[in-house]
Amino acid sequence: MPKHLFHTPHAALRWVAPLVLVAAVALGGQVASAQPRDAPRSFADLAEELSPAVVNISTSTKVAQRLNREFSMPELPPGSPFEDFFKEFFDERTQRGPRKVTSLGSGFVIDPSGIVVTNNHVIDGADEITVKFSDGTELDAIVLGRDAKTDLAVLKIEPDHPLPAVEWGESDDMRVGDWVMAIGNPFGLGGTVTAGIISARNRNINAGPYDDFIQTDASINKGNSGGPLFNLDGQVIGVNTAIISPSGGSIGIGFSIPSAIAKNVILQLREYGETRRGWLGVRIQSVTPDIAESMDLDHPMGALVVGVEDDGPAKDAGVKVGDLIVEFDGKEVPTMRDLPRIVAETEIGKSVEIEIIRDGRRRTIKVGISRLEEASITAEDDSSDQETPQSETPSLGLTLSNLTVELRTRYDIDDDVEGIVVVDVDPDSDAINKVREGDVIVEVGNATVNTPAEAIKAIDQLLDEDPNKPVLLLLNRGGEPAFRSVRPKTPA
Image 1 (cartoon, rainbow, N blue to C red):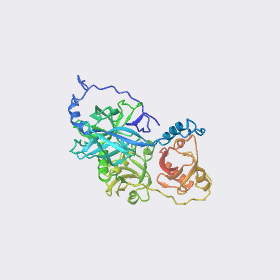
Image 2 (cartoon, one colour; image 1 turned 60 degrees about the horizontal axis):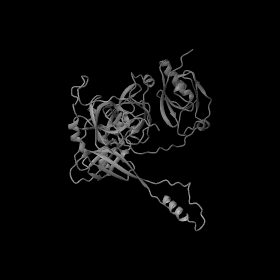
Image 3 (cartoon, rainbow, N blue to C red; image 1 turned 90 degrees about the horizontal axis):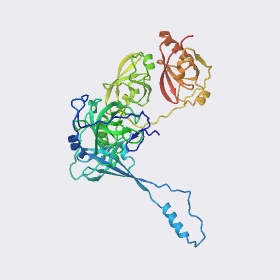
Image 4 (cartoon, one colour; image 1 turned 90 degrees about the vertical axis):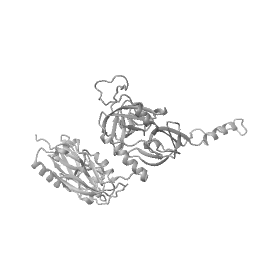
């Protein structure tokens, strides 16, 4: 696993990024003319006010010892003077109990009664959790709820007096270049304050399905996980979570969960002990430039529906494969990855309007949002034994065949998949980089195809309308739907 991207303090994420060295920013002395006029001369007052609400979180986990079975009690003559010595040695090794492993992280109090926010990976698997304040007070904590998908957790402690607490701010109001301050407990040194600016917004680091991170150059090191990122009003606009680093130390690329996401998740964890996310019941993919052209779009946008769950609200509302979702409940859907987050944050049971593009026309559909649950899909046996000759599509460079028992076995195609199978791809065609042997073509344009003849007819009709326009194909590849846009071959 690459070590360039780490959840602090120890959990690695699967992403490798270029390493960028960031010059240090001096907060004292003369202010350069390029700095904004409202740049603070000092963060001291803010740090003094907020630090009491930021805590150190230490955890301990019992880990079973792995015994080395390669060594065993040697055979000794009865009454040997070494018999008692070896017996005592091997009894001690085989009877040793589990050992404790400890780790450090950060957190912050959001309710004076003793509600603490941190990262899920800080407390994941812990048997004991201790919250330590800057004045040295230590309190045991229990987990009220945690969410691995957003890496957030809520703890409860029992103080004998109201605690200093911080409040949430609006991360959506923050702009690239705004000053921010982080407080945490890097390397177990105690409360540490760092400052910097927001370097970027809406970062996707492949940490989970709802990635929308704030990137900052405020130093975030091991042990800062779960600590707050403040705006200059002293409000929490992010929860520090991950860094990019070759060694585990800060190089000026850190990531925080924005408060716009964290607030809703924390609220649900406090109330229910779990998250309750909205569910639309569609499978989606990104719109590439070629797909955008084939759909007569000016630019790639929205989330393209490649599958509709039979028992989902989208099916009941009339959403179809090939629909392009561009707006959901009044919120624009700029890219595919924006839709899952918007839907997840929608109230369960709420009736919302979604705007789609279908057949080149915008339409509005009303749909009631259900709760996201773990679901299993079972397929019914509906295979076909029909045998037909193969057919070629010279314009696209594909050789097609009906789905037969032999082809289903050869390409490992499930019995519930319907369409026509690709058995060869012309290496000189545009399809060579987009379509594979064994792919099943389900639709051409918006037309369902069940035979090669139907596919060729649909392709020819589209090319008669515009011979240079890419042809949109809905494929089934390995059981997963996917759209591909294939340009016709240029005549020799």
